[in-house]
Image (cartoon, rainbow, N blue to C red; front, side, top):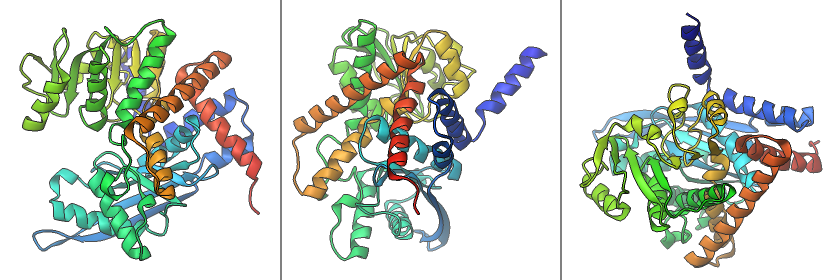
Amino acid sequence: MCARHDEVYNDMAESMNPFEMARQQLATVAEKIDLDPDVHEVLRYPKRELTVNFPVSMDDGSVKMFTGYRVHHNLTRGPAKGGIRYHPETDLDEVRALAFCMTVKCAVVNIPYGGAKGGVVCDPAKLSAAELEDLTRRYTTEIAPLIGPDKDIPAPDMGTNPQIMAWIMDTYSMLAGYTVPGVVTGKPIAIGGSEGRVEATGRGVVAVTREALRTAGKQLPGMSVAVQGFGNVGSVAAFLFHRAGAKVVAVSDVRGAVLNNNGLDIRQLMAHTKEHGTVVGFPGSEPLPGDELLTVPCDVLVPAALQNQITTKNAARIRARFVIEGANGPTTPQADTILRENGVFVVPDVLANAGGVTVSYFEWVQDQQSFFWTEEEVNAKLEQILTRAFSQVLTASRRHDCDLRTAAYIVGIGRVAEAIRARGIYP
């Protein structure tokens, strides 16, 4: 009876809306660093929220209404920065939580942005290219009062890509009457995108993994790695792990997973995925149910798919020694506690996947200056920033005797709080 009660309680706690989870994380850190109550109160609320409902002409001649959001959490440290996701289950609380996380993430890597996020409730896989373009351009027109290179700079997220960023940039430029490349990042190189941006998040995951292993006196060559999600982040990370000498033993996508304890050839797997649309059926691998990938024996586990993947139902069965969060929010707070008690070293999303926003910052700087860097320069600057950020978070973890997630929030929230105190409250 008691065990059943605990299970129900955990399910209820893990189903808490994501923005309340973010507020709980803020409260935990506020208590730990004795945060000024006035600053805490400011950070509990997004600065502004926009909900838009807009029509789109569908290919069959009908008109369908869509709902979109854009949320600015905090702009004290600079313009708002955050992705736009297209997903059928996105909602305002999810966007609020992600905007809060962007505030923290930008501060953790110490780039001069505040946090924002956007979303449209839709399934892009069920829209034609023409419908997707029309939806994007109409959504851009609706949120145009909020965005701009000095106000709010969107970027790709789940369900969006460089082409969608190009449509956003073009629509905004048409409204402005001149070309404004700096209004978005993650766009094609032909219209002001940055070298290295597509690979940035996955590259960052590998960089912080290397630093995490170093704390235990280990190196990437020879380490076994499992990657959940084989999209932009997961596939790039898997390829770079493979190239660095690590043994990628398992990967998954929405249709299933593949396993080879001797290591998968990631270059061939990427070719297979391009041809067949899935990792499933890759020659020389064993099929694996997708939900079992997280519990595969390995040194490093990279959840790079959706949020809330590591929960109380599977956390105790995770056998990796290092969990590097390539996705946003893949671990619930309750599961986080279990991992910590089991001695698993978790690098949180606000640090582990910050490579994307870091190179987005580089792209924005290049657009503002109309002066562009080589991919080697971009990658070198990315490595420098993430290595420094990891070191600062690790130092905070040791100083406050806490896990890396709490330490990352201590660093990030501390920087935002310092900026709020310096600027004061107007009027």
